[in-house]
Image (cartoon, rainbow, N blue to C red; front, side):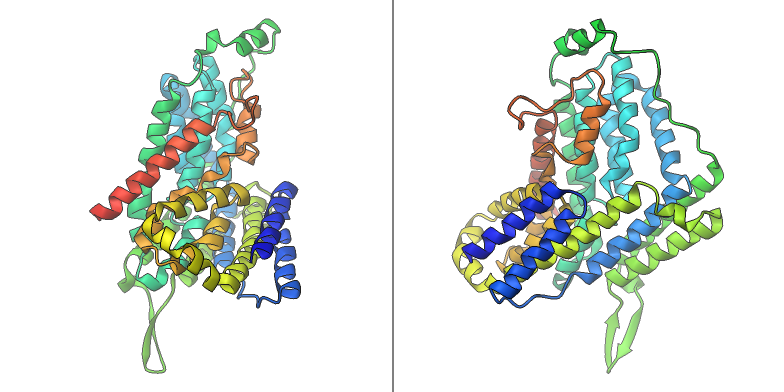
Length: 436
């Protein structure tokens, strides 16, 4: 088992270094070793999760192609420029909402340069709003009803009579408060901008010019607004279907009444939303595949395909040994499983892949499904090593040099807001499961 685990971790580490679809394809290599070398029987690939993500990404990509995301960014820019002194509090709210609505953190890219510029103009250290804004875009993944991670968790907990609303009523307030606490802590990070030596040095070198970052006006505002409205309505329908079983269609099969599963509902609603956006706004379907959302989402599909399939095969092949060795410890201290989720997310760079790889073990160990929901925000650990695309983008957008990776790598601008937001969200989640 230890030797198998070594191959699994090696595949994950190499895949993370390769980037893009590297994680998924290396999962295939690891699966091949487990199957052909160690003789483990492959489990079923996570087809439903992959198809759900593909459907959501299709709708989000169509919204982007119709100008919906640009319209949302323009609104965010107006909000930030009207309230520049509150940029550290408003920025994470903006990126949180973007991710919550779209189901992917990659939509935060477009607003990061605006955050950096507004902060610099107001002489607020850009590290403060940028750091927590990136973290907020990650935390919202575990609160979004259509994110790949939430969909994966819902699928795994469906057997416990857990609805989508059961997950969201814990994760939404927990992550929002966690992000706001992180923002309050961020307001005291580092020296004031005018006193920062790196900023003073760049100022003296004439590094700054009068050119402003301006988000272009949306070409067709009507189509953009329609696309956003359709996407939000589709998301609302999914929340309703996921929260109230009575709303879902039922079928009589062999004398037994079967309720339509949430995976099929998400796929139907999101594919339909994508079609409506294309038809009503007269948007070219090819254009939907050329934006930033589509390739990022497809990378997530490939990652889950390879990594989750490899992880499932390893866990099922060694479940007896694993549960026997750590069951007692985890039952006494279930919070240790939260640490395992956090560490695995650092390795996998994907909340959804972490959920699919490790949550089945938590279920097998007998951890309460509500405890697993409370620990769900622990899968947001990929800020820990500062090489995730949104982290790198935030560093590059800050022309003052305050948002940075420190001398010791881990002492970077995202560590404090990330740890504070994650810990607060988990603690509140544990409190909320007692209350609800």
